[in-house]
Length: 119
Image (cartoon, rainbow, N blue to C red; front, side, top):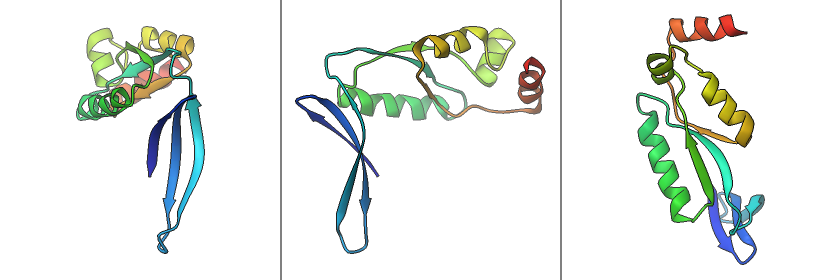
């Protein structure tokens, strides 16, 4: 289980392992400055992906996580919009932000073979 808490120094993402004896063990994972904006690529995906990503972003927003999202396409939605399951604009955004949140995408034989051809 993951827990996000806000502290005076920023946010802390903690993994919590609840053992059968009820003991709680906390392992700090990530801490980020509450004042700093973090650029990130957001890929909603397709199928159930957009719903999952929307719920995830709502949770992050509730904790005032300082992400500045750049929304891009991938999977079948990328193939339909750009003729490519992994459009160059999506890759450019990921390279620039160095961080991405991706929802599930539909994979078909066509999207996989197209991506494989690009190497």
